[in-house]
Length: 130
Image (cartoon, rainbow, N blue to C red; front, top):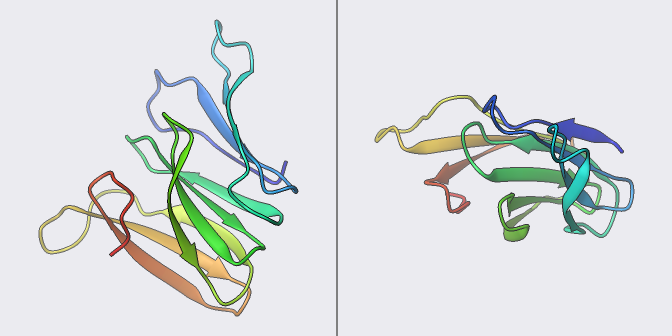
């Protein structure tokens, strides 16, 4: 396990983890879930180093040494979008709150092995990058 993330809602008893084999695991860690894995997918072909949960939503982002970030719907375990980078991606995080002129954009920042930081705008909750 390389990174962990929790959703921000107190009543949500899940935890996300990414692994050295590129897997994303979502586990129910509540009293009834007892650590049961509810999602087990492999969105990456190399080590996944970072995971982030968009506050108040079902969106997760995973960052990998395969030079990509994947946006995932945590309720279904489906990959919504892949954001390619010129080198391995070592970090990913969502900015708190909403941004943009209409106040409807969420920001996702990534740290890339080429020493670059990239910021993507995500509109709505469908994971589409802008």
